[in-house]
Length: 255
Length: 142
Image 1 (cartoon, rainbow over the protein chains, first blue to last red):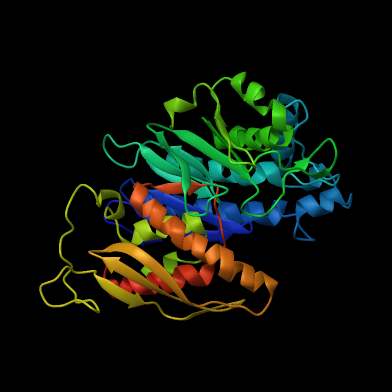
Image 2: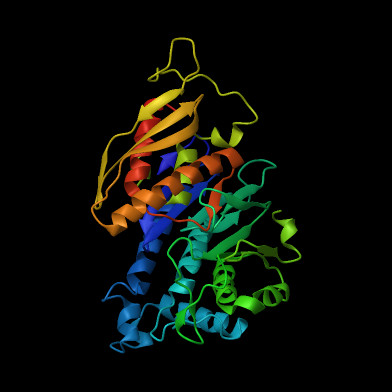
């Protein structure tokens, strides 16, 4: 935890990635307490949902050793959110993309959004919570200033594709291959797919925004039309050959 | 307290940590001159701007090996980060050394130049890089 005069910042290594908190509100005791609670929540979510942990609820549920009623209530919530994302995306999002139970594609964004909400409920209204490159923004970083979020260029290390500005509340999720190779699974074939170098989605809340980004990435050619038809979401895609496309309303957020 | 912030890294976390180290500074580089820092900094002649020079970070042991960087700053702004030591024991180490570390540097510079608050689509893990860079910035008193 770090004081910066008027705000609070924290970086936490959890869920195999980096979460960072950028809180611009006055660090009241309630806000500090909420930050600690948000960090605890992330570790709790990791313990319950990690597919890398043999003894996590999700691993044991996947192996059939326990039933849903034996799990914390969040497991049911996540699986029902996954089912909804699967329905919304015509099956291009899956809680078992490679065959076995793995809701990781939803959990990180959902946990990031929850962390943001915990802060908000404690009176932190101007925050940026970054869950390994997927962000939930609220409010603004300073008076009259929008959040400015660089979109990393997937093919040119160090360069940005564009800068997304968010005047008041926005989720930004990027699915890509640059970071960890081809790790998005086509749920229809169960094999890795990489029709894009990266695909960035902006929307109001991170849970659906992140899952839709994953689903759109897996969908490939039909992604643009699908996102155009989604109310409140805009996308920027970088293709493997470096060409880019943007949905019609993306210019409201970035160039 | 500051040091405790840097529990780990990633490009996006690096950007945030840089902002945490230099509150209101990275974002306001273009708008306002920076007030002089009270403390001296290496490579700085009396009367010249504080936070100018090359600052060698502490070597940081990670599970992969030792990482050490040196940051060059001009008036508190990072102009270059050189990796002095990086693990190279196996393929994963070499991957970090040859790809992730330069990328972290470039993203730190790009973020600083674009005056952005965070980066989407990047989350490299390079704990030692971050810690060593932070110690370099601590020396620069920025």
